[in-house]
Length: 393
Image 1 (tube, rainbow, N blue to C red):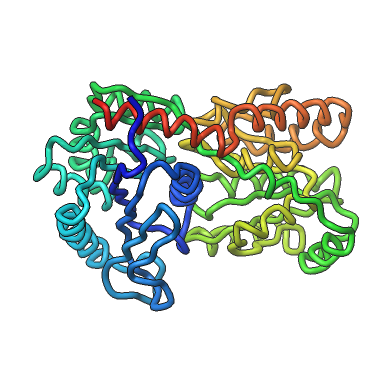
Image 2: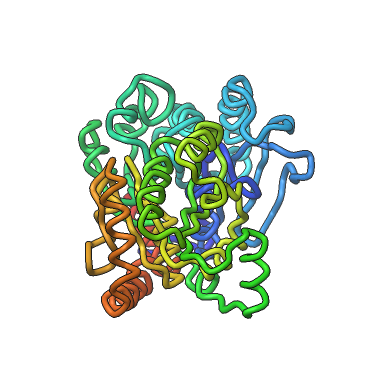
């Protein structure tokens, strides 16, 4: 029995458009492809420009709390969101009767969902795990997936969706006893296959001061788990033999000052560019000027940036950690270096540039994999199947 078009689902996510990371982009891409459901997204309000109650086709976005100048605000804003989201869900449920709960990322939205679930235990709950931290970090005792509330979410869910085998194993380790299904994040193939004119690429190269160098790109939040420091050290080693290299690091984060210091220490001023945060719709142009994509991750839930690079036809270097192993096979769909190994990354960079026939074959294999398994249309079909099962439990 398929769910009726009027089926209403409450979505708890602390952040949502226009403030989006990988998890929030996944929500947006999925819900707009499932018009047979009505979604109400309960999120925090970060900007006075954001509409407090906004309807978009089959999605209602309810932004809660007062806007702040900071993207994520302080702890009290997050705690305030928990209770606002809970109260808002109760009020909206009285009006339209939610038939399912969807928690995306087991953190503050998850706490609000748990409070709502306690009052409505018969409403089935789907928990989506997207966390990319290491197992050691995930098992620390703090709010969210890593502590009491995360374990309660996992143990009170009727269904769990994870983006990788790594997170499936973690959910089982935390006591999950319900169906668990792997549905990865997807890629906007049309966006990342965008063809740019020579003039557009030339303008970006001039902006980034790229001349005749090979371009190594990473799109990465500047946090330790993403291994940007490992990439910088790899570039330093590669440049000793081949100075024609330029490394572009697109992303912001708390590690910026430390990375700037490392760049100076390794004498890479001018060779490594911290380009700052780049909007999602501008990323394909960065891939269009890149020769190699590298992310020397220390941990990873899945790694959407890898999938985007693969879709764009850029050869990828990664590490065999977390969910990366689900899609990155050395010499088949990408190139794999050991964790914490700048020398290994530098060797893989040389391999890519020196063996163009092999590299081109790997790139074609990677693009075929993305088309086959990681399009948003494929992901949405898999998620519809989960919602059908959830609602008919």
